[in-house]
Length: 54
Image (cartoon, rainbow, N blue to C red):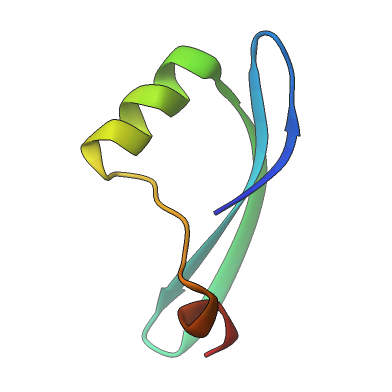
C-alpha cells in the first residue's frame, strides 16, 4: 500500500494485490477513520522494501 495523498477527510491510496503470479493495482480514496481501523487490525499494511521489489 502506498499513500498517494492525505487530506482532512482521508487518504488516496494505491493498493497492490499479488496472487497466483498476477498483480492487480487499485487506486482509491479511503476515509480517515476506516483507514486507521484497517491499519490497526492489520487488514492494510505497507510492504517491506524487499517484498515490494519481488
